[in-house]
Length: 437
Image (cartoon, rainbow, N blue to C red; front, side):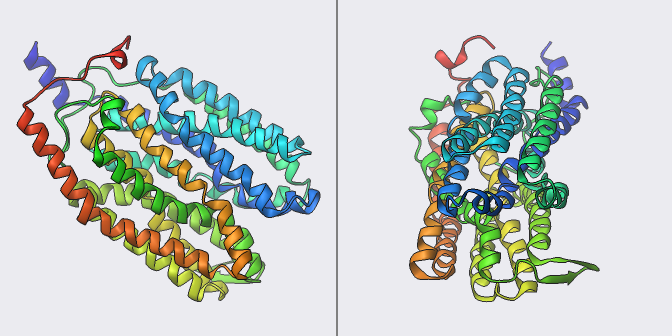
């Protein structure tokens, strides 16, 4: 029996690639909830005059509910499988954008943001968790491919949404895209499932991975988790500011409508930047995930977060030029999006597969914490009269995270691994979390 099981694990089921594809499709369908938001801020303000800062509170609410409830949703996934959680998530994301279409008050806008965040978090956390479980041998790459669906998923719809906003209005864009995205997620959810025994291969030999599965309450007692959490917040805050504020920044720089010609394409600077940013923000996730599978998570973090710090600083210094704005915003997004493959992979490397969706979900709440800083970007920009201070603060945060990877995280991981080795091998943790499968 043991030999048969080992043989099955040596030849993992090809079905896992289908599961990866289903997760990516779901991620593409929820991408606009975050990455398309910046297109709606100015039209909403032009209609209701609520002010950018008040409207951006909705973005923070969305990110908070999308992230901070993922551990709860992950708990259900680890117990009952991914299908039901994603089905409900698809329903909620559709309802959220339908409400945005009719929202005539900030209160309703905020309620819609909360509903959308819950739905998007259910889809996001489940899809990432499923990839982490199906691909222990390519964890960084496949978590990155799944996260790429979220990062780049809105690239093809940027121009259609802009045209719909300019024509029928932003309300129609919310309505029709919301219904379509929600229905696709609900349909694909019926195809999702977790791996069974023998359907996954052995762990990646090049990367240190735990021999023990840690439940969430054990993970929260580990300093490795909190260092990763702090690093996630530092890097996430700068990227979220750029995501939410890119259109207002371009307008304030007076370059949003300036034509830019690159690689044989001519588009307004903002449209060009948004399209390229979405693509690069998607490409970076599997790319740096693959790199981390080969050179280690901390080495990859040092490179990527350092590049992000340089990109943000350069955008503040040279972004008033339309061409440089397009190029440098692409650098910023390329060096930021990889956090959504590196941190879940590292978390599962350290704390195991059995509770991977719950544990990675708890770490993902750092994105919600980072989102609290987004409205302060507007406040700081208004107080100083420019975006320069915002850029410099974000660059410093990324530099701190880059240096923390080799100097703090790596030594702590080694101590954690040494303590586990000293205590001897043990099986999965049993307790309340190990209830019905």
